[in-house]
Image (tube, rainbow, N blue to C red; front, side):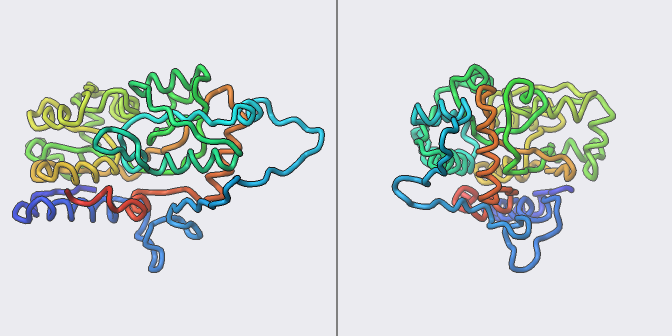
Length: 318
């Protein structure tokens, strides 16, 4: 599925963003358009991803099992009185930060806070990790109970930590230099070309897309960039043939940098999902059941449409 931003060259930045928003929220999704009365795109019977947080001051009353001990890992958390939550990154709407970089909200903060309430403890947010690699190391060592931040569920990561069920599913996407794609005659299907030919694929360092790129494009050279500005500069200089990330990132880029839409083409890999889940420390095997029960009972299984419906301010044109 190709998106060519050139048709809104005269429409201005917000006009370009309007097309990107329409594409990412509609035809870029792998499922058919939602039926009337279900604008969120969530599965039938789901509630558009709204976390229904009750306001009881003391939290839920635990069911009593006389003479039965809690699972050891759950008991440690309950005795401590806190759920240690590691959060890394700035990927909205999972993590929403203010201009000073402090976390002020987001889907993952809501989940962590409400999960802790269900356990009868309070969430302690730790965003001190300097990288995702450090976040996973601390989680593996038991310094953290769970970790969030729009984390992808990958084969490499499950070797070291547990993961919850998927609560957000995104689509992988290729961002291409429009002129380079035309020169190579790959506007209609760059995926096949990049799979079959030696090429350079750009990804963000320390992201799941390092792994995804190596799996999808075994012939390609995967080049890592520390910031989006560097990856997009490499794309404009034709140092890479494409940049690989997810459709949520495409939507956010269109919001923050609408000017680039005149020079790029976006190709959604409709059958390649990026499953977002919550990571858990190996010392907390029984906490995973609590977390999955929470996600199921709150019917949290969202796509990009549902994220946009819940956090419209995140996707507005600046």
